[in-house]
Length: 153
Image (cartoon, rainbow, N blue to C red; front, side, top):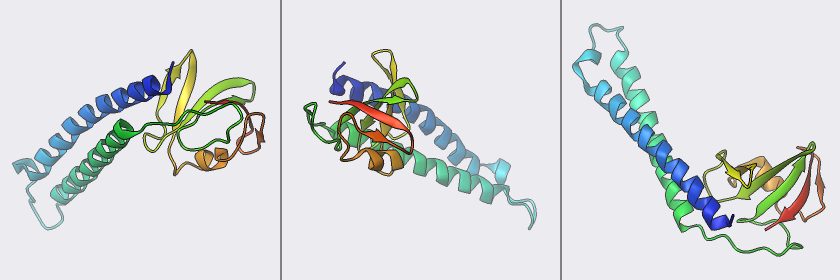
């Protein structure tokens, strides 16, 4: 499977999550402004709590929308087998005897999709593992977490 196909699958998964989050954010916004949350006394904080929830959910929707936009524009470079790991790399690794893949992407960190029967985890730049993998080569053994780089594409 090509990296562009993998990225499309990740983007599609994030778009599905966004649709669910948009509905939840809209419901939270309506709840925050509805009659049910109108204050009934000076110690009644339902309206404030509902507005905090609505605000946080709106921020999550905006963040996920931005991630999807970044992945839409993401055109990862091709890597030769001996190239160092850099942004856009698809890394095959052996982690405690288990084969796993990591895609170093600009957004979508933490997402996991199937890649040729194995898990592929998206690593965003703020991830410590993303930073740890940068500059590594095929055959390198990393210590934290313990993994061996088997391939870079």
